[in-house]
Length: 184
Image 1 (cartoon, rainbow, N blue to C red):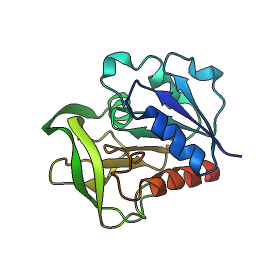
Image 2 (image 1 turned 135 degrees about the vertical axis):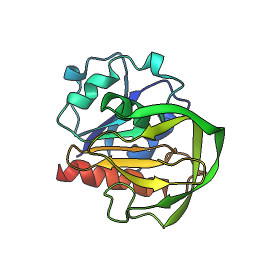
Image 3 (image 1 turned 60 degrees about the horizontal axis):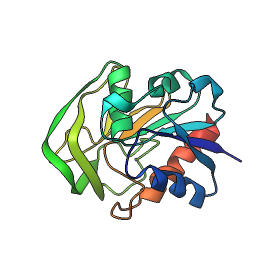
Image 4 (image 1 turned 90 degrees about the vertical axis):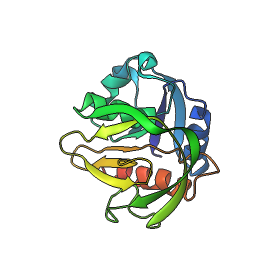
Protein backbone atom coordinates (compact mmCIF):
# COMPACT_ATOMS: atom_id res chain seq x y z
CA UNK A 1 0.00 0.00 0.00
CA UNK A 2 1.22 3.48 -0.87
CA UNK A 3 2.35 5.49 2.15
CA UNK A 4 2.17 9.28 2.05
CA UNK A 5 2.90 11.41 5.10
CA UNK A 6 1.55 14.90 5.70
CA UNK A 7 4.11 17.25 7.23
CA UNK A 8 2.26 19.54 9.62
CA UNK A 9 3.13 23.18 8.98
CA UNK A 10 0.47 24.19 11.51
CA UNK A 11 -2.34 24.78 9.02
CA UNK A 12 -5.96 24.69 10.05
CA UNK A 13 -6.79 22.07 7.39
CA UNK A 14 -3.88 19.64 7.93
CA UNK A 15 -6.17 16.98 9.41
CA UNK A 16 -8.36 17.22 6.28
CA UNK A 17 -5.34 16.53 4.06
CA UNK A 18 -4.68 13.33 5.99
CA UNK A 19 -8.35 12.40 5.82
CA UNK A 20 -8.51 12.99 2.04
CA UNK A 21 -5.58 10.61 1.56
CA UNK A 22 -7.01 8.02 3.94
CA UNK A 23 -10.39 8.18 2.19
CA UNK A 24 -8.78 7.19 -1.12
CA UNK A 25 -7.05 4.18 0.45
CA UNK A 26 -3.62 5.59 1.26
CA UNK A 27 -1.61 4.64 4.36
CA UNK A 28 -1.06 8.08 5.87
CA UNK A 29 -0.25 9.97 9.03
CA UNK A 30 0.50 13.50 10.12
CA UNK A 31 4.13 14.11 11.05
CA UNK A 32 5.46 17.13 12.95
CA UNK A 33 7.55 19.54 10.90
CA UNK A 34 10.15 19.17 13.66
CA UNK A 35 10.65 15.45 12.89
CA UNK A 36 13.98 14.73 11.17
CA UNK A 37 13.38 13.93 7.49
CA UNK A 38 15.68 10.91 7.65
CA UNK A 39 13.40 9.21 10.17
CA UNK A 40 10.28 9.27 7.97
CA UNK A 41 9.48 6.33 5.68
CA UNK A 42 7.13 7.29 2.87
CA UNK A 43 6.43 6.95 -0.85
CA UNK A 44 5.44 10.62 -0.97
CA UNK A 45 5.30 13.77 1.14
CA UNK A 46 2.57 16.40 1.44
CA UNK A 47 3.70 19.72 2.88
CA UNK A 48 0.58 21.16 4.49
CA UNK A 49 -0.68 24.68 4.51
CA UNK A 50 0.20 26.88 7.44
CA UNK A 51 0.35 30.42 8.78
CA UNK A 52 3.96 31.43 8.05
CA UNK A 53 7.48 30.39 7.12
CA UNK A 54 8.73 30.92 10.69
CA UNK A 55 7.20 27.60 11.83
CA UNK A 56 8.29 25.17 9.09
CA UNK A 57 10.85 23.36 11.27
CA UNK A 58 12.70 20.67 9.30
CA UNK A 59 10.29 20.77 6.36
CA UNK A 60 12.94 22.04 3.89
CA UNK A 61 14.89 18.82 4.54
CA UNK A 62 12.01 16.78 3.12
CA UNK A 63 12.77 18.25 -0.30
CA UNK A 64 16.07 16.34 -0.25
CA UNK A 65 14.33 12.96 0.02
CA UNK A 66 14.04 10.87 -3.13
CA UNK A 67 10.22 10.81 -3.12
CA UNK A 68 7.58 13.05 -4.74
CA UNK A 69 6.61 16.14 -2.75
CA UNK A 70 3.29 18.00 -3.01
CA UNK A 71 3.02 21.42 -1.36
CA UNK A 72 -0.33 22.96 -0.49
CA UNK A 73 -0.50 26.75 0.00
CA UNK A 74 2.40 27.42 2.43
CA UNK A 75 3.85 24.05 1.36
CA UNK A 76 3.98 25.28 -2.24
CA UNK A 77 5.55 28.55 -1.11
CA UNK A 78 8.18 26.60 0.83
CA UNK A 79 9.05 24.54 -2.26
CA UNK A 80 9.31 27.72 -4.34
CA UNK A 81 11.53 29.47 -1.79
CA UNK A 82 13.83 26.50 -1.24
CA UNK A 83 14.20 25.86 -4.99
CA UNK A 84 15.10 29.45 -5.86
CA UNK A 85 11.73 31.04 -6.63
CA UNK A 86 10.19 34.08 -4.97
CA UNK A 87 7.21 34.46 -2.64
CA UNK A 88 5.50 37.71 -1.73
CA UNK A 89 2.28 39.19 -0.46
CA UNK A 90 -0.79 38.64 -2.56
CA UNK A 91 -2.99 41.47 -3.77
CA UNK A 92 -6.17 39.57 -2.90
CA UNK A 93 -5.62 38.63 0.75
CA UNK A 94 -7.57 36.01 2.71
CA UNK A 95 -9.64 32.93 1.91
CA UNK A 96 -12.12 33.01 -0.95
CA UNK A 97 -13.59 31.00 -3.80
CA UNK A 98 -11.43 31.43 -6.88
CA UNK A 99 -11.80 30.17 -10.44
CA UNK A 100 -8.45 28.74 -11.52
CA UNK A 101 -7.56 28.14 -15.14
CA UNK A 102 -5.56 25.00 -15.83
CA UNK A 103 -2.94 26.11 -18.36
CA UNK A 104 -1.21 22.74 -18.83
CA UNK A 105 -3.65 19.90 -19.46
CA UNK A 106 -0.75 17.42 -19.43
CA UNK A 107 0.42 18.40 -15.97
CA UNK A 108 0.52 15.20 -13.86
CA UNK A 109 -0.99 16.86 -10.77
CA UNK A 110 -3.71 19.21 -12.04
CA UNK A 111 -3.90 18.62 -15.80
CA UNK A 112 -6.90 16.32 -15.50
CA UNK A 113 -9.06 19.03 -13.91
CA UNK A 114 -11.58 21.05 -15.87
CA UNK A 115 -10.08 23.99 -17.79
CA UNK A 116 -11.73 26.21 -15.19
CA UNK A 117 -12.09 24.82 -11.69
CA UNK A 118 -13.57 26.50 -8.61
CA UNK A 119 -11.23 26.27 -5.60
CA UNK A 120 -10.90 27.57 -2.04
CA UNK A 121 -7.66 29.50 -1.62
CA UNK A 122 -5.82 32.02 0.49
CA UNK A 123 -3.68 34.61 -1.23
CA UNK A 124 -2.17 36.44 1.74
CA UNK A 125 1.17 35.21 0.35
CA UNK A 126 1.79 33.54 -2.99
CA UNK A 127 4.51 32.42 -5.37
CA UNK A 128 5.57 35.43 -7.42
CA UNK A 129 8.42 33.83 -9.41
CA UNK A 130 8.77 30.19 -10.41
CA UNK A 131 11.93 28.35 -9.42
CA UNK A 132 14.15 27.16 -12.26
CA UNK A 133 12.83 23.94 -13.81
CA UNK A 134 9.21 24.54 -12.72
CA UNK A 135 6.30 25.36 -14.97
CA UNK A 136 3.07 27.18 -14.20
CA UNK A 137 0.22 24.67 -14.30
CA UNK A 138 -2.66 26.96 -13.26
CA UNK A 139 -3.44 30.64 -12.95
CA UNK A 140 -6.34 32.90 -11.94
CA UNK A 141 -7.38 36.51 -12.15
CA UNK A 142 -6.11 37.06 -8.59
CA UNK A 143 -2.86 35.04 -8.71
CA UNK A 144 -0.50 34.44 -11.60
CA UNK A 145 0.83 31.12 -10.24
CA UNK A 146 -1.98 29.01 -8.73
CA UNK A 147 -0.14 25.73 -9.36
CA UNK A 148 3.41 24.76 -10.31
CA UNK A 149 5.13 21.54 -11.27
CA UNK A 150 8.53 20.06 -11.89
CA UNK A 151 7.96 16.46 -13.07
CA UNK A 152 11.74 15.97 -13.45
CA UNK A 153 12.20 16.29 -9.68
CA UNK A 154 8.63 15.27 -8.72
CA UNK A 155 7.98 18.54 -6.90
CA UNK A 156 4.46 19.97 -7.19
CA UNK A 157 2.39 22.69 -5.54
CA UNK A 158 -1.01 24.34 -5.50
CA UNK A 159 -1.95 27.65 -3.90
CA UNK A 160 -5.45 26.36 -3.15
CA UNK A 161 -6.72 23.76 -0.67
CA UNK A 162 -7.83 20.56 -2.45
CA UNK A 163 -8.74 18.99 0.90
CA UNK A 164 -11.74 21.23 1.63
CA UNK A 165 -15.30 20.70 0.42
CA UNK A 166 -15.38 24.14 -1.23
CA UNK A 167 -12.82 22.98 -3.83
CA UNK A 168 -14.18 21.21 -6.89
CA UNK A 169 -12.45 17.95 -7.75
CA UNK A 170 -10.04 18.23 -4.83
CA UNK A 171 -10.03 14.46 -4.34
CA UNK A 172 -8.83 14.11 -7.93
CA UNK A 173 -5.73 16.18 -7.12
CA UNK A 174 -4.86 13.77 -4.29
CA UNK A 175 -5.54 10.77 -6.55
CA UNK A 176 -3.20 12.26 -9.16
CA UNK A 177 -0.50 12.70 -6.50
CA UNK A 178 -0.91 9.08 -5.44
CA UNK A 179 -0.45 8.05 -9.10
CA UNK A 180 2.74 10.16 -9.22
CA UNK A 181 4.04 8.46 -6.07
CA UNK A 182 3.20 4.97 -7.35
CA UNK A 183 5.02 5.55 -10.64
CA UNK A 184 8.10 7.25 -9.12
